[in-house]
Image 1 (cartoon, rainbow, N blue to C red):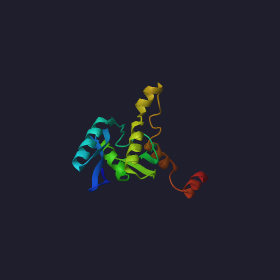
Image 2: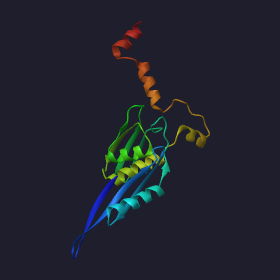
Image 3: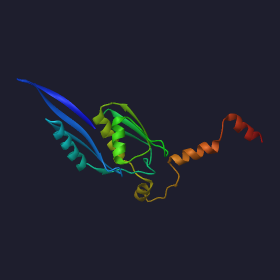
Image 4: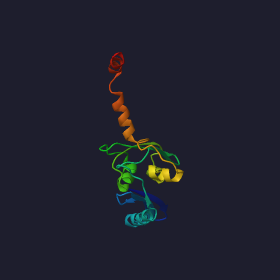
Amino acid sequence: MRINRSAAVVKGGRRFSFSALVVVGDGKGKVGIGYGKANGVPNAVEKGVKDAKKSMFRVSIVDGSIPHPLIARFQAATVVMEPASPGTGIIAGASVRAVCEAAGIKNILTKCHGSGNPINVVKAVENGLRGMRTRKEVESLRGVKLDSEAGSWKIKQKKKLKKGGGRKKQAAAKAE
């Protein structure tokens, strides 16, 4: 996803080393994030991929989106993620987009605040995705039954349809 070059000044000149931030996923709800450092780019990427495969985790996906809105933080990076209706696509910056695509999320709205450092942003997204729970998981943890429509984008759509129009239409409906 991102390769960074750092230089150390030594007696004979500069010695370069590389670090690679890697995102690995199966596109079906599993994603991993890894960070590798080495003297060559291929070695750094290889180490990053190994690290990412070791740290893979499952992401809760409902209708191609996330189950609920969340605010994820890691150090100075804050990422706001919201579920989106089908057909919206991935509205995100490069770092968040890479993680969402690897995880298999198709529709999501995101916004990054604070630090734009890709490492911190990706780790914030990871923290958020790890903490997500589906309706079934919450019901089993709490031992209660939740309303089938509550908390989803479908409720927002129904509220918009019920309101129907502006003030003039509502005033006309009251007058009748």
